[in-house]
Amino acid sequence: MRLKWKIFVASLKMFFRQREAIIWTLLFPLFMITLFGFVQFDGIGKLDLGIANEAGDKGARLIESLKNVKTLKVREGERQAELLELGKGERDLVLVISSDFNAESQGHLTVYFNDARPQEAQLGQLVLQRVFDEITFAQNPSPNRLMVDAVPVKSRNLTYIDFLLPGVLSMSIMQMGIFGVAFSFVSLKKRGILRRLWVTPIKPSDFILGQVAMRLIVVLVQISIIIGVGMLFFHLHFIGSFLELFLVGLMGAIVFLSIGFALAGISKSEDQVAPFANVISLPMMLLSGIFFSRSNLPGVIHTITDFFPLTYLADAMRSIAIDGATLPQVGPQLLGLGVWCLISCTLAVKVFRWE
Amino acid sequence: MSETILEVSNLVKRYGDLVAVNNISFSVHRQEIFGILGPNGAGKTSTLEMIETLRSIDGGEVFLNGLEVHTHAQEVKRLIGVQLQSSSFFDKLNLKELLLLFGEMYGRVVDYHKLLAEVELEDKAKAQVGQLSGGQKQRFSIAAALVNEPLVIFLDEPTTGLDPQARRHLWGVIKRIRAEGKTIVLTTHYMEEAEELCDRVAIMDQGKIIALDRPQELVRHLLAGGFTKERVERLANLEDVFLHLTGHSLRED
Image (cartoon, rainbow over all chains, first blue to last red; front, side):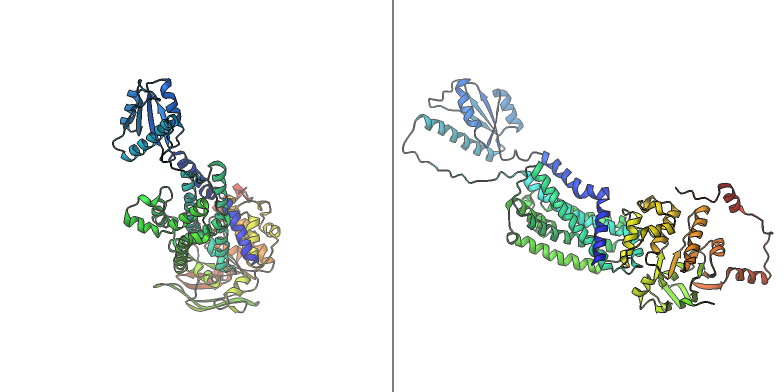
């Protein structure tokens, strides 16, 4: 036990004294999050409404009401300029308040819409009509009007970061497992460091255990720091339990560590490891719903990616972190990770070679 | 002569069709410096690695301090100290941490300061192996081989790649360790090193031992057979010139 502990402590020291390790496990994921966080995907879902107000003060009240509508992003400009923007696809709708507009009287307003985006156009017209109705109703109250009672539900305005961050976190657990283990073990093998160990009475399992324990601790540090930074600097809406996140993260780590050991087992040099590690990790990085939702993937590919270990891990991490899911609620993902654990551990034990 | 601590009999190692070690036998006495000489590929390293329990034995037996090494690998490992040819140590630990860690592998808390002093590296306790010169690295791996106070120390080409000063310095370290009562088995392909250090040498070629005796005896035997050098031995050679000009002091710091 004492030896296992000493090896674990020494492994931790070695890991954290490597500058590359810190870069790849902590700085790189944070860099990815920052980079993708700057790409504003939040604008999606808002309608770009251009308004050409030719009625002066008479149109001002209407514009104020429209600006209060959250689904609209209102910009004002000259009629010609706004129509030009519409033509370029920079606006979904352009509303022209003509000079003869009078809010008190009945009348027509002209809305131009982008023909190529019928959904936005229709939604926009509904929103505008609703606003106009409110104004009309305020002027001519009619007792028999059918009303909708909207009941507000407390909802969290989840952003792209909320989607991205748990995914990048899962991805960096994968990278640490596959690349971290495979490269460092191949190097230990190649440089004769392992042979030097085997002339001492140490049991190989003690050494492996110390190394695995060290990397599991690194995963916990990764999760804490990345989630923490997300909450502090990126307004991550974290409502989950850290304990459950840790448990799922560790399960994922075991899967990817075993894959790393299996790769180290079949390779003699770093050059041999790299292609294998990339072939395994790249498709998962791109298709497991890390940066973009998998919902747009075509049928067969979507089904295949359902079974990727990184998909299970990222989905479970995201559900726990953002939706506050409990372990039973991510049962299917845990089952998937469990099966992968069995497969990858068995594989690692079968193919691992010391020499 | 004195008591035998290592007994190798009819040892064989095969790699496919190649017989790397072909039925060799020798014994090493307690507190002896025993050299295995030979050109590259003679089977020196394979022989050492079988004795060190690193390689499987394809034929024959090895007894170390009365223990058969193949069946008593764990016990034998506790009795030996090993410096492997071209093996390295963990990068990011310093010498002190490495010695303590290797000590733990034997369940010992080692006096790292004493070990480093033994190989004259006491001021390098906080250095990492990557920061050491070639000679310092070799001395450190000897220190690491001493953590378990072994009975027998195996040194595989300890001075290969070192400059003349560093080599002579390492000879001093090796002699001192023997003077403390340890048995040393080393391989080398430097003849002057064998003559300087070894009590007895085995010369290997193509997997066989072709001569085994004290260096002086081997020379006497050769001369008795009528051998004469083509030229009369010079009173000094180029190495003497080099050392005369550059001095004996180490150049690694």
